[in-house]
Image 1 (cartoon, rainbow, N blue to C red):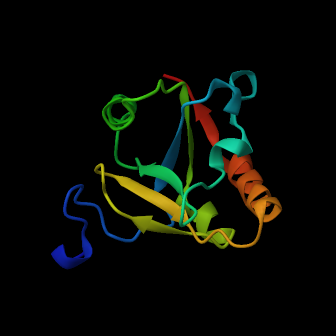
Image 2 (image 1 turned 30 degrees about the vertical axis):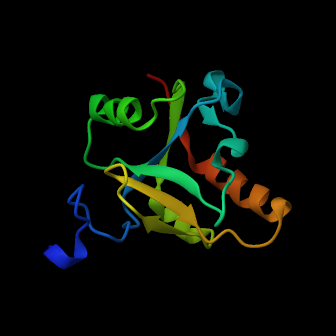
Length: 136
């Protein structure tokens, strides 16, 4: 078991995202998902900001209701149409990593985006391929 120093203060989760964890990206733009194919489109996984990052939440030990509660509490300025669930392992496998900030609780960013927009699109496609769309 992780020591208190290795755990995040708000969520109680370890500071480092484990390979076996399930993470999700909430989808706030309807065109960034395909319900008929149960897919979240690559555009949803594209990084933004400075430094480049893609926001995710850690959901491994939560039931579906608790995950949607996080969405309601964390994303108050726009609707959430779905979420893309995937294994954290995929993020590590494609050369990216996580920055855990736990603001709000369970929040982290996918970081390590290198190169240009074409490089980011290629990485986002790998995340798209690994993600499964879950609708509320």
